[in-house]
Length: 444
Image (cartoon, rainbow, N blue to C red):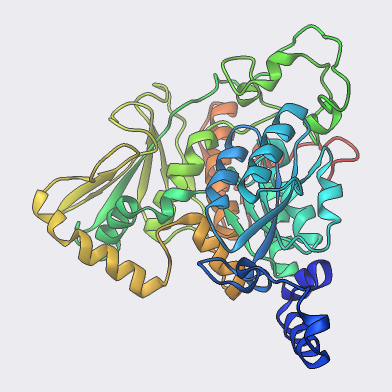
């Protein structure tokens, strides 16, 4: 990282010190005209260039601009490039980055592969549509970049396997954007479970929010003349998804026929389960595996879909029964806890459990060394090379659980899964759905 910055700016630690030494030794006539601002030397709260992580962003509409704004608050990150297939998002993101730094230096690209050619970029944020997440992450890691990728981390089981293989072979840092793992209320709920304060936990519940209709379908819309490629690169927007004629309705996330609702463009359960099912598996200590039995919900998803892990814990994923979004609930023999977005504090079976909130939360931080800021965890890991809290293995294994739930609903029958072999037991039809055809040339 330091070497890359030095090559581009000439302001690495060694080059800066060498320049200063030579300038002073040569006399004031040479030294005085050269002014180094305090911010370049890391004074006044600024971070010296040699300590900054040089960043790019791939996909800056919707969640992408939110992540960019969040990361711009980190003084040791410096954004030099953004990319989006839509010009309106490129222009907005470039304007915000330039305003943050008081210049016009941020480069804007339509094709993220050009961004990846920038040798000085250390890490990228990926916040494209779901169909691009795994492929863009793999190409980024192969290009030597660390990756913060929005959830879901993959659209198919085989994409997740390829993601993990690349992560392990390249040694890059990968973080999936399940930010609630790093929030105090959710940490507290997990600590109550992990430390046995709820007794024996045999049931956990995960909130499901927006869901497409099942069986999942692809809308057929009339073709509309495409905008100029600089306004919208439709081919790149589709990426590995099958070709469809352009219609602007697909660009919206929802309602139908927005891309969130389409089989070709997105996962189903994972639209919410990549938050909540991941959270449950993390707190159960099962983020390196997947559930083994999946019950088809004959009564529908409002009452819930039940899955079982090998240790006999069952997870019920349900739409109803929550007073906040992205919620989890852990039910033990001696009590229960629930946390969700919008809760000022977790719900508890016994309010007395809250008296240890600070102790448990602080104890987690001391034991793990993790900050209560998901992006900060990523930044710290880029510097230390420690695996991120929700690395590629977590992304893949928890997404496998989500994706099998989708397949269960698509096939309208219960399924059994071998998490070691990563295959369905005695079920060729289900095994064929672990993968999808990826459109040329956008293939893993």
